[in-house]
Amino acid sequence: MLLEVRGLDVRYGRTHAVKSIDLDLAEGEIVTVLGANGAGKTSLLRALQGAIKSGSGSVRFAGEVLTHASPAERVRRGMMLVPEGRQIFVSMTVEENLLMGAYLRRGADWHQDLSQIYDRFPNLAERRHMKASILSGGEQQMLAIGRALVSRPRLIMLDEPSLGLSPLFVNNLFELIKELNRSGISILLVEQNTAMALDVAERGYVLELGRVVLSDRADALSRDPALAEAYLGGHASSQHPIDQIA
Ligand SMILES: Nc1ncnc2c1ncn2[C@@H]1O[C@H](COP(=O)(O)OP(=O)(O)O)[C@@H](O)[C@H]1O
Ligand SMILES: [Mg+2]
Image (cartoon, rainbow, N blue to C red; front, top):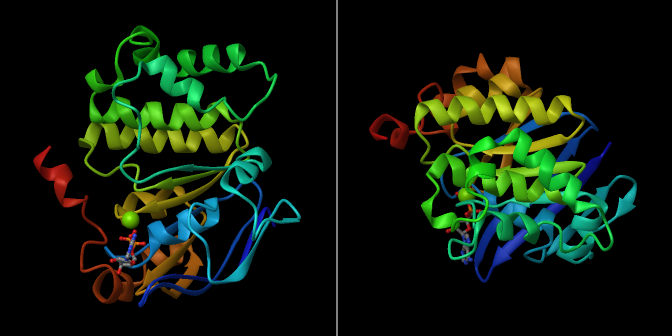
């Protein structure tokens, strides 16, 4: 296994956000984590990145125990989170944002990585010296993913990347996820767009109130009527509501 999570717990004071979660991800896999708002998805990913401390449990990545490793150490080992809401620096240029992804790679040849990212995202190349604030939501998501790629991750963890994007951009995003995966990057994908997430993923986990309540192959989950009704508020097969307005 590339990633092995056992008994992971996250608490915020009296809120028990993640309850003894076990999760596996094999090298080369796309695994999705689904669940309604407040289910604990973001807390799980932030704990995996080391951004918040887990109360108990263990995280192994590529054979190393990283349970107590700093976020920077996890990035160096190849784990990279693309956070919810993208968290790009809007007052910095596109290129400065991308270089933030390189700061942990001492002496690495990030010039070459930048040019690969610009080849992949021509919209970012054209706007490289402009402030990130001028980018559309879809372009900002590409920038957030581009920034993650500069760190040369083995595993990218995406927290609701499709949120707030128009349907066209959602399609582009899912194509990009497949492409990154074909290029050898493993993917842990948190989504509320259940149908599309199960379509790209090999396996999925469903969280409810911090617990894994279902885990199975993605095709089996997408046929499971319990999924939509019981755990996802009946939205399993629809786009995220915001897509219908955008
Ligand atoms: N910083 C925080 N402080 C206190 N409670 C939090 C914090 N972040 C999340 N929570 C709570 O933890 C639970 C899980 O939240 P979260 O991980 O954001 O879920 P999801 O990403 O699935 O919507 C919710 O009850 C939420 O209110
Ligand atoms: Mg969240």
